Length: 297
Image (cartoon, rainbow, N blue to C red):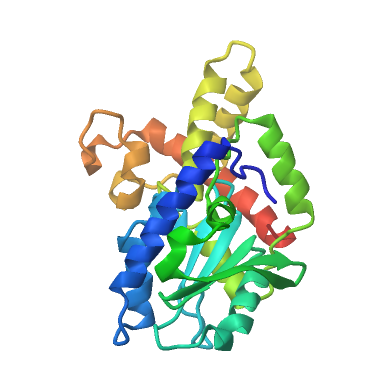
């Protein structure tokens, strides 16, 4: 598994399992036969199921995938801060049998290299763990009696986001070892969709964070007395290769990066120096992503 798996105390894991049990029972109490699979999905979101597992941001660590050309789509994927997929969730209407949808979930879990798959109709819930190109069922229980399930801590521990940090050498090394045998191939449409959704330009997303961190690193290195190479290389790029747009052609999505802190995010307040730093960071990010897309994640 990738770095960042939960490693809290036994008491913390028990509390998490108990909280999850209460949420699942509440959802089961809300469910009725006229609900659609979308209604079941909304119930999990509204009742705080993903919040309890440490996921915070829809469109960030909680992704609702775009519909694919064949009409299918994974309903929800949850991500670690490393962008590795913790679990793929498939929601069905309360009257549907879960047995009819196992193969669909297995395909998503295998393609996205997810650690787990979850299948539920709001009344029953199944947890699967990826095993090579397939998956094995871990637990299967009725949600109405979830608080009495002995292995609910196992479910909470498996689906929890956990903590992951680029500042931890152990986390980075563990993740590198994991990714060496769990690369996401980009041959299928679902993998391509996931890749571009993960790295779309968004300040709260992975790519936006990369651009912002690169800008901060560039500014820090230029201030160092012994970093004349960085200053010279950036100066040469700006004079020879940079294609910096005029203020009127700067997309509004860039304003948070190119307007100094404390100033209104309006066109007149755009800093040409910050714009140059941002363009350099953006090109650096594109170069890194091109390597990723050629080699697989």
